[in-house]
Length: 210
Image 1: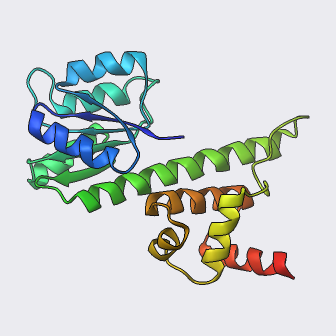
Image 2: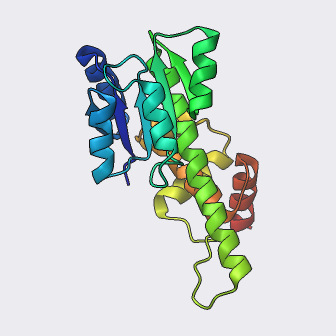
């Protein structure tokens, strides 16, 4: 399922550029021109991650971040600041407001994508680990166990490629899929099998063959 992102910035050209960059990576992207407009959208649906500018009329990024952190619905939603304010004091205030990552403009699209992928993969693995621990600790009948789930055909193909020592880029080229799709498959394999790295995936493939 595509992850949903909300981009908040009062500069229309930059807003379109960031949204286009994220949509090219198969993210579902919504945009808002102000903090208050962002809150209106959040009242209807909570995204998986928020990218926000700081300098905005009415409610700036700091106020938006603090309000999000103060609400149970949005307290844990990752926030990335993408802003021209690059002084140390600005960064400190951003982290105090509760943002997860602080990037400065002009930004490198590859860096923004890498940051977002890293955060979302970590969140997904954390959720799976928590669900697994709850299942193990409660011992409830019918509880879902996330460990040792069967891999899909696509995941098996990626796992075999990993066992051959191919990089994500090489796997994407060989299987004719995007690098982001490869990253998602690897993340799912790690979660399903309770693995912590690619070496364990390779070992798993070897054991299945033998």
